[in-house]
Length: 92
Image (cartoon, rainbow, N blue to C red; front, side, top):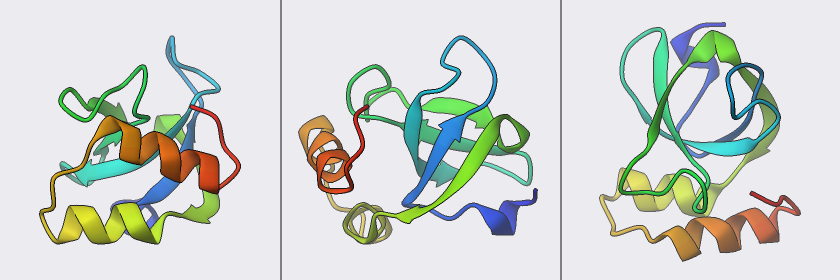
């Protein structure tokens, strides 16, 4: 899995680490092997988790609202992330 596979706003599931099984949204890209993920509750927007791409399972879900907000440099709240998860039928 490479950098091109995961996009900002992509919903992913953790495959490894103490957060295994948790659902996150890709909040930013660091390099070819790492991304930043948040879920709005355990991993808040002000302290995103740096995660290796190989430790994440890609889903077919993308939150276009979160993606647009990040790409437009809008202020994103943890509540906004949680509401988007609810809209997509996910719980963080």
